[in-house]
Amino acid sequence: MPGFRDPMRPDAPLSHAWQVSLGRFALLLAAAGVVGFVLGHVLPVLAAALFGYACWQLLSLYRMQRWLRARRRGPPPEGHGAWSDLAEFIWRKQRAERSRKRRLVALLRAFREAAAALPDGVVVLDRERGVRWFNESAGRLLRLATPRDRGKRVDDFVPLAARKWLVDGPNHEPLIDVPAPHDEAMRLSFRLIHYAGDQTMLVVRDISNLMRLEQVRRDFVANVSHELRTPLTVLHGYLDMLEPDDAPEWAPMLADLRAQSRRMAQIVEDLLTLSRLEAQQEAPDERVAMRPLLASLKRDAEALGQGRQAVALHVDCDLDLRGSNQYLHSAFSNLVSNAVRYTPEGRIDIHWERRGDELRFRVVDTGYGIPAEHLPRITERFYRVSTSRSRAHGGTGLGLSIVKHALALHHARLEIESEVGRGSTFACVFPATAGLPPVGEPAP
Image (tube, rainbow, N blue to C red; front, side, top):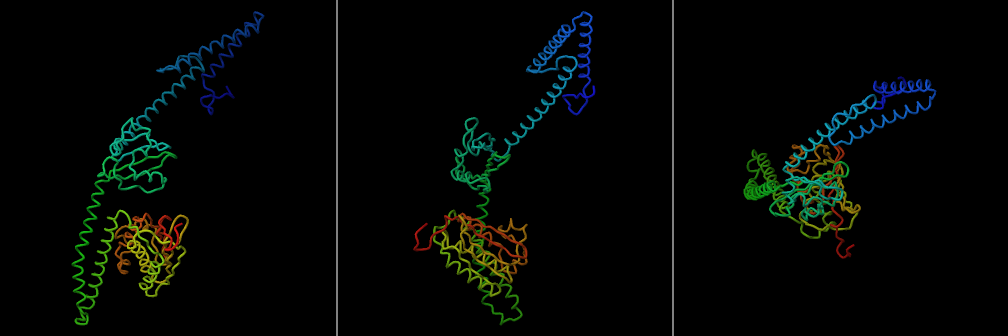
């Protein structure tokens, strides 16, 4: 019938079942009208016909409702016209929905089985940091049990060292080398992952073997470096005894040998410094007087650059630092010497300043600059942006690694900004709590 649409498909013409139903209804009204006209009572006969039609529709509706409420739904009840079409449509939708539900349940079961089989511990947390679910590895690493610990707050079972870390926010770095709550010999790492808006997942990993291997590596490097000091000292001493004037043809060779022996000695010293930094748990609680240190760094930069660069010192903060004089001097000196080495001509600015809740030591140069792809790895040991250029300037490839470890020991961080051809900025960022007022002034 033109102008009518199927309610199951608004964009399709009226279905055949609906056409049959409307045709039957029209035929019923026509027959009732004819009978009423013959009997001389048109309205009563029409009313009786409509009442019967309504009772039949209510019966069909009751059968449909009973079928929909049945726990085990079979095929739809037999009907005629639109009711049959509607029941068939609902049945097809139910079958498709049950099939989709079975697929989703199977997929969810597969994901849960995969998560349960992970060697890393996985703890799913709610908004209040309560435990919603955890796998077997998390139960083993953190001593969790089902259903006893489901719903418990994460602060109740993580080690003390991880509780403050959990409060720091979603963007903090993973927490590494934390003793397990039930076994000091087991070392754990924690990573907090935010997903699906406000959902949080805590990933726990046993890194005991990795930490043991790291300790073996540190011991090996420290022992080998220590053992190399004596032969290098002897070799360097004998080279100093040889005079190039006694054998002019040997002069270039002696110069190369002396340069390489000095470079080897510097590498050994840097490796020993790194080993000491890694073995240190906390920085010594000393006063690092910044004004004398900054003045010394400026003099060293001018001497190393031999006047090729303009070195400027900007002191906008009167605070000293709390920490190790030796390690901080080594870190700052490495940054300044790098700026001099990689700035053939130009300007070097050394800044000591306070910005909000942070204290910053910055070294800004106008040198070669560092390509962006190298920045994530620039603090790795022996990593070089340009091998030939680094060796030509006497670098060991360990300076920035020493800076990173020294800052980590002082709960500080290294920030690097660089652009090729325009220079670099290296900033050592300390929390304001690391500052000390100058001697003779009261603490803030």
